[in-house]
Amino acid sequence: MTGAGTVAVTWAVYKSWIATRLPIESPLEMSMDVSYGARSDTGTVVVQIVATDTIPYTGLRVRTCIVEDGLSYSGKDYNQILRAYFGPTSPYHLGTPITISEGDTIVHTDEFVLSGSWVPENCRVVAFVQNDAGVPPPQIEREAIQAVQEWVVKPMPAAVTGLNVTLMADDLLLEWEPVTTDTRGDPITIDHYQVYRDTLEFFGPGSDPFLTTTDTMLIDTTGVVGDLGTHYYYTVTAVAGADESEASAEVGEFDRYLSNVEPPPE
Image 1 (tube, rainbow, N blue to C red):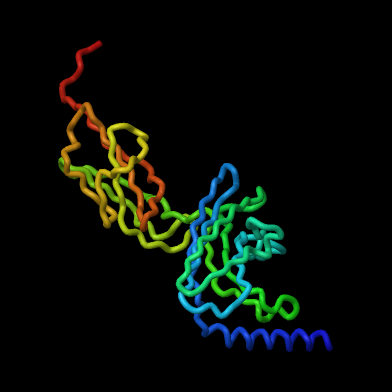
Image 2 (image 1 turned 45 degrees about the vertical axis):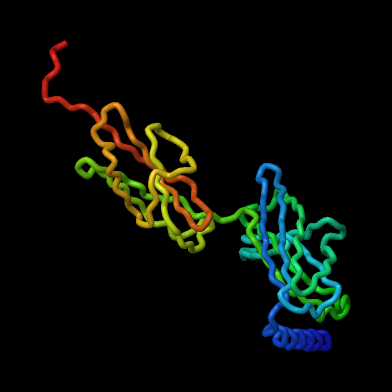
């Protein structure tokens, strides 16, 4: 009973302390850029820390780690499971000491390696700044001042599906399904679609699209119909911000000469 009572009181103290700290705005702003090489399972994280107010803490350290989603155990799925800390010094979990004052900006860079048993698409890099007050026990005064996280493999807009081409007199009507999610299945807002055209089948889209549109259809009125010697092929991508999806399946137009004159007998 004593042990259970102790746990209950401790948790109550923590909850009370958390409630008093939540309304207090952080004096730090953080942003992060993650680059990852799938072949080597290595990456680099660049964290920018900006002090926007007076720093009422001492002994600040920036800590970086890898967490993974989608882990299963005993029939249950778990997210944001800590996989490892990383950084330039060992032990990594202690982090890197920093000194920052109001108006300062610090750029912190770390390298990381993913274990072969982790799924890169399910992993995120988490960086946080924490003070060293209250180092154990009770650790109740050691708090995360600010934190930021990014996916190791950045989600991109999902590929366009349902691309279809229809003949409209001398023009071609291209239609496709709207893209509403990213490659992780999360909702996304698409800024526009890019339509690529080439005379070579299975072409790879270049840097310059044929046309762009915010709609899920486009009419090619450039007179591509009727040329027996040239065929045109199309593919479409979705763009959200600076991110462009993979190319859709390809469609094309083919012109053939038809004659009502019977061929001579063989």
